[in-house]
Length: 197
Image (cartoon, rainbow, N blue to C red):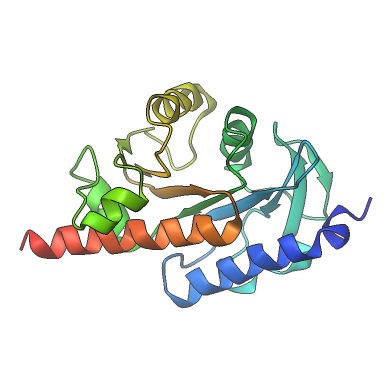
């Protein structure tokens, strides 16, 4: 089908974001995942499972439908592809999802129920709401998808949420914008933590 080749700029955006987050140490080892909706199709391009952000390449990207069924690619899709697909199916304005285990955001989620907006900038850019959700797992189980989607529905300007003991999930119209939101979440959690010292 050559979907990845036919949407190479989209693939390059994913690789650029992944490599940047590896350099920033927002996602180390081979965890985390990111994806982008493929315009005009019911498909998404997603990181393969067990591949680190730093070495992600065209061969370790996978195309699936929104229910996680593989359409193209040699590797298996990320374990979180089902959550990404559920977000795309329910939220037509979301074009990309970034999930990473950035240190300050993950640490903040351990003992709080919402992210404190440590700057006015963060409150505006993050839509005024960034909850902490506890899904009791290192992979968000499907039974929690409804809770997450309901939270997004109640707060339509919300662009990110934290997962207790797991990390953060950021959403945007493009991969670049989703990555910027994730960076802002990490900065916001860092400032909030430092200001509490």
